[in-house]
Length: 101
Image (cartoon, rainbow, N blue to C red; front, side):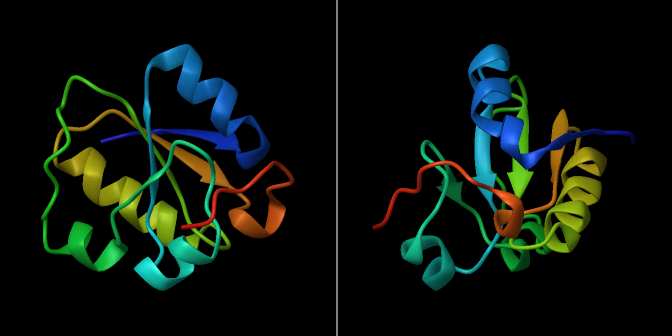
């Protein structure tokens, strides 16, 4: 299945415009160090095991550190029937505010 790509700098606006779920596919430790506001953490390893429980009626916007992990996650999620938007550039290109937990 196909999925869209956006620049990570557009992530929050795109999420709001599409009532999408922002999914951080990094490890829980990296997520706690700082993540994009509104993001939920679902590590790539759980996606690879198909441990995903988001409603299929919602669009998922995925990101990681550099873009490789989110691309892999986007492929898997789209195969599972989700509408997916992949962020190009990852956290290293993101310049917005971060939430730390």
